[in-house]
Length: 40
Image (cartoon, rainbow, N blue to C red; front, side, top):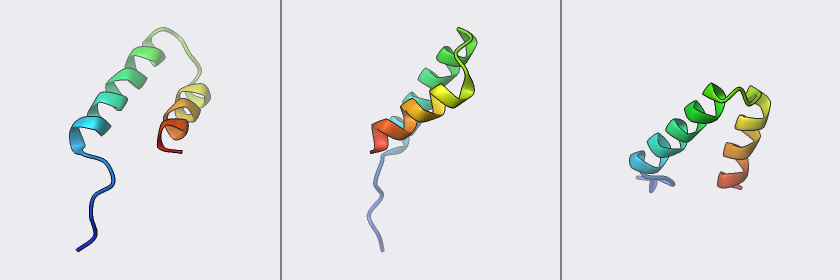
């Protein structure tokens, strides 16, 4: 079996951060880009 790249806790934390940024009015595209960069 393949090894998981990211633990569930890390993914959940990043999604929560994204939710906060969206609530502040940051555009979705910028939030997605910042998440993509963290996986870079």
